Image (cartoon, rainbow, N blue to C red):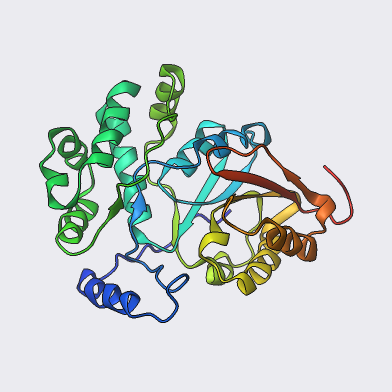
Length: 286
């Protein structure tokens, strides 16, 4: 699998223009996601990620959104062989680097969780003045450290309005993460609608989409799922996280059109979200 990608660092001088453009966009619901969009400090879908564990093994190739950085970390923890990440926002990639740096900085899960809690409660430039966070920043490569300092002066980098109070890592799993995650995950900066142009025919055992139906136009869901089918190996699985607020019937109709509804399994709902697993086999159940 080709895991080499150029990761362009956005020109932060464009950020204010992007923020202004989204503010006046006529499309208030779907027009505001861009490369400067802030990301969550902690995942709001921890329970959904945990439900994928039994479908990952040492031979699994995964394509996942970077999200809050938890997604790739957990897939490696579950034992995935390769994890390729993507997101529309560079800040999502930056958050992943922060969490890898935090793994290097703190040798126990409680200190790591305290670091995440500080991220949740700290905003704007005060972020880099917090001692626990600053220790992690000092362990970042200079290229990310410099971008972070500049970005915090210009835009909102991270969300601080969603905390996963059920998120925890055992000492065993935390120790395992520290051993297996030492370098950045390969990353593609891309809107999901254009991701196929960057993947160039690569195929995966598992594809994990976090809340894409929340920001895609309804008429874009089917084309995205149709493209996704091309990324999956035979019998590969798409995990689709979506909120109760999304129209479940519209999503299932789109799955039926692209994969056949008998390929879909709906997992239990957790904390305002549910998980759908879709298998790349037409006409067969799970």
